[in-house]
Each structure stands twice: as C-alpha cells, then as structure tokens.
Length: 188
View 1 (cartoon, rainbow, N blue to C red):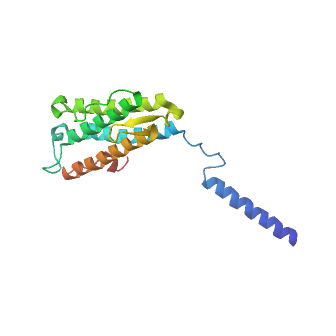
View 2 (cartoon, rainbow, N blue to C red):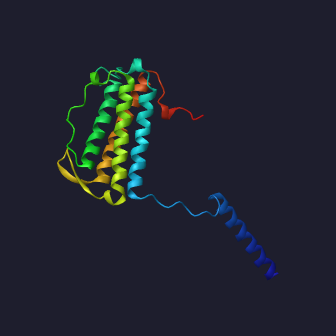
View 3 (cartoon, rainbow, N blue to C red):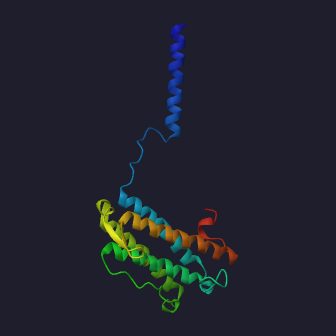
C-alpha cells in the first residue's frame, strides 16, 4: 500500500511539473535581459514607431487641424516632437543644441516633409544610442533645459516620455477629428 501511495504521489508530481513546464512554454530557458543600450533603444524605437505611424496615417488635408483653437496643429505637434529629439541626439553626439524654437510649419510644405523629419529624428537618436553602447549609457551629458549633467540613459528616457506625451496629445486630435488612432485599431 505504501508503495502504491508513493507511486501515485510521484506520478502526481510529474504531471504537475510537466503541465507547469508546458504552460511556461516548455523547458526552454528564459531569454536573458537586454543590456542597457538595447533597453533604451527598444523604448526609443517603440515610441518612434507610434509617432511615425500617426505621421504616415493622418490625412494630409487634416495636417493643419487643431483639436482646439488654442492648440498647435497636428503637423506642428509632430514637428515639435521631432525637433525635441534633436536635443537628445546632438547632446549625445557632443554637438551644439539646436535652436530652442521649433522649426516653422512653412519649412515642411507637405505631409511627406513632416514624415521624413519625424523618421530622421528617431533614426538619428537610435543611431546615437547604438553608437554609445552599453557602457556609454552611463556617460554624462548636459541637459540643455536644466543645465545639469545627466546620464545618457536618463536623458533618453526623458525624451521617450516627451514623445509619449505628444503621442497622447495626438490621439486626441484623432478622436476630435472622428478618427481612430493606429494603435487603437483592432489588429487584423
């Protein structure tokens, strides 16, 4: 009897362990954590993908649409986000900060011009992050807005957050215009 109980307990434990391993995707080892540069790059690219999708998706005839009379236009918000990214990229590269004022909408005559500016700003930032690598994420840069030194990783996350705020604002533009933002659409 004791042997039967032991065998039943052993079978029970084996079944539980097997089902647990199956539920966790088999016995494969977990993917290792990303290094610091890759973690920053993933966040940078994710918000970049979202803003680029909006820039490409929003109709060109609505690019000068305002969600409210006191707000900037859809295009001006995208230009602002892209211009802000230049502060990050220039700082990381050790270059002079761009002019504080956003470029004027008139400098970007078409939707394609705005889309290209947004894409370039995120591509340049991604290249700067990659060039610094893991060890460079702890390098110090001077934040042109606070005139304080900050680690590159923290500096990057500040701009990711800023772009996320712009993304949130632009979702309102979509909704007020009677549209659904790309990220809110059902996946096909």
